[in-house]
Image (cartoon, rainbow, N blue to C red; front, side, top):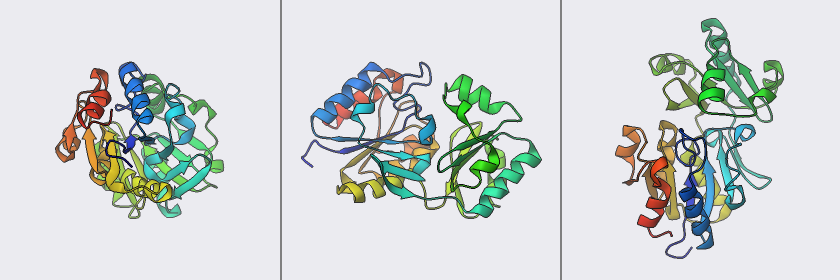
Length: 263
């Protein structure tokens, strides 16, 4: 890569897409278009599974590859770069705990997604607050449990998280919202996803820039050559980043790419 060319990795919610408008700001579309024209590559790094990545239409043609489900499934085109399923015992620990405690749970399989929503939190947060689409295409839990499970999203506050995770020793939690967290296998996070994509694509991991705003972005902010926290990011991510840009709604991506002379 030339001096101003990088592999750029972007979280979706709160980084590329505004929590306020549920859209990609025009300045971000402009910035990514210019970065691609200058020879940089554009990758997505999200906690969302592929079935609910439905809000990137304006930049879809610019995307070179995807880190999804917080690094559990990475792909470029039709080629799987990395797949890290959760241990079956840990899966059942979470499913049974959800049923016993009555909290909502999304179970992400290799092909399908199951939604258990006794509390109504999935509908309230994912559908109404985050405008997530395609959850109406969810499958029965028993069908999904026959597949490799890539991610589980339980809806409970942070103070219960450590209690459950102590019973799921082969998993890691990546919280990016106060009311739910994303659980993946220990070998899966966005930082490891960057390394997997770099090996596949043949670029130096030091020539990467990662953009994020939540706790599940920490691994890639630390792994990337340059880690950038959005102005609307949580305080801990800002402390660990190399640079804090403005918020997603205040041209944060454009500002950072100009600052580092990518565009």
